[in-house]
Amino acid sequence: MKETIIVNQKLNKETLFKNLVESNIKINDYAKLIFNHPEFKYTNSEDQINIVQLKLSDIGLKNGGNFEQVERAMKSNNFDFCPLEFAPYIRMHFHSQKASRIITKNQHPPDSILIFSKPLIIDDDFPKGFYIRNIENTHWLRGYICSMDYYWESETEIILKIKPSI
Image (cartoon, rainbow, N blue to C red; front, side, top):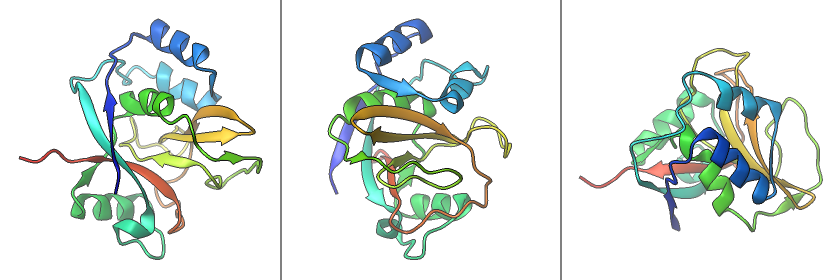
């Protein structure tokens, strides 16, 4: 299990979007909805987080799971939600993600990596969080919509925050 440190650059909205553009990172309309929601905070008190990229099967979900099951498995393995505010910094850090050409709709895209975060609001019509994807060598930070009972496959790649040792 390889840990990665993600530094909180604490950028305001304007500077963050400028950095995403300069890094050639695209965002979709669902990501814009999250960024524009009044509950989304561009600054987070944490200076950095340690994250890990795993498959759901690595945290005991051999048959996959829905949001509640992923949350339970995550917590029982000493992981936590990635703060939504860190998603852009995670995307900027992951430069060498495998490229995909497959376009999907109404399902988790192959070769994407889910950044597992606590949703801003519980509403099936509002984006739950972000995933990162490389589509034909274009890096994306994409928001996604799903119901709380959406079922991710066991091979779904996921980024989790490592709980700090006490």
